[in-house]
Length: 98
Image: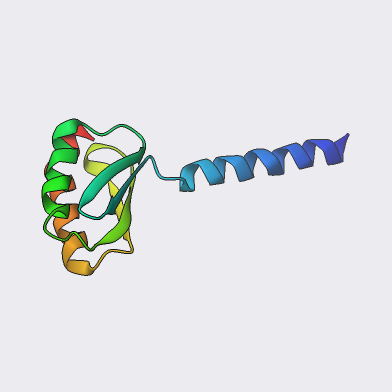
């Protein structure tokens, strides 16, 4: 009985850790297009991201967003630093809506 409880506790803690690590919102950028993969983002935010992405049509990568409002954590994968910074700026401009 004790081992079963311990196993269930380990599974629960592992599940919570996995859920906290997973991004709340995921946006992909490819060929100058922006696609929302996970989460909910207002259309105005996607439009601003599209405007930035169209200036770099060769870029491919994704943006991972965790948190809400002033407590955002943004991670850009596969994007050059200049484009990533412009995308972060656009997202932070709208942080109250995220």
